[in-house]
Image (cartoon, rainbow, N blue to C red; front, side, top):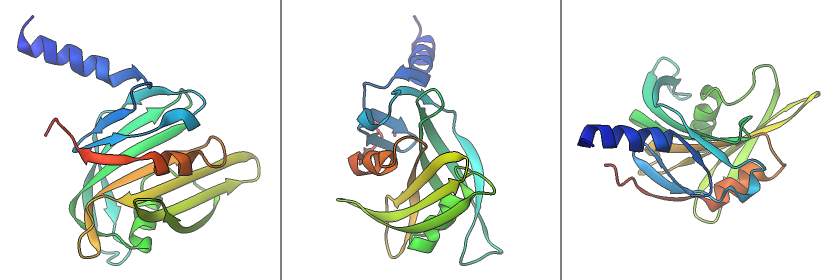
Length: 181
C-alpha cells in the first residue's frame, strides 16, 4: 500500500468512529472528552469549513474562522467545535457569547439566557436556549489561547441531552496541541 493510500484509509476510518476513544483531534487541537454523559456515544468528525463571525465590539468588522467539528450521537446529542479565528477575538463574556450566537448552534426564534461558566480549569460563557415544545439546548464556549483579553482558538460544546450534559462534557475537557501539526 502506498503512503497516500494508507493516509486515505486512516483519514476515512477517523471520520466515523465509535466514541470509546475519548481523544479527538479537531484541527490544531487535541482534546480529551469524557463522553459518559452522552446517551449514544457514536462519534462523527465533520470536514472543516469556513465561517464569518461579526465582532460584537466592532459590528462593522467581520472575522473569518475555520471550524473543526465533531458530532456525538446519531441525533446528534452533542456537538464539539474548535473555532480558529484568522484575527484575535475578544475573549470576554460578551466575545464568547458573540461566538456562540453566530455559530449556528442555537435554534432561531427560541428564548435565550446567558451567563458565566466557571469550570475547574477554564472560565467561559454558556447560553441556554429554550422553547415551550422542545428540549433545552445549551452551548458553552471557552477561549483556549487567551492572551491580553483576546484569543484565536475557541472551543464550543452544545447539547440537547440531559440538563447537565453540556456542563459535564465541558468540565471533562483537557486540551493539548494536535500531533498532526
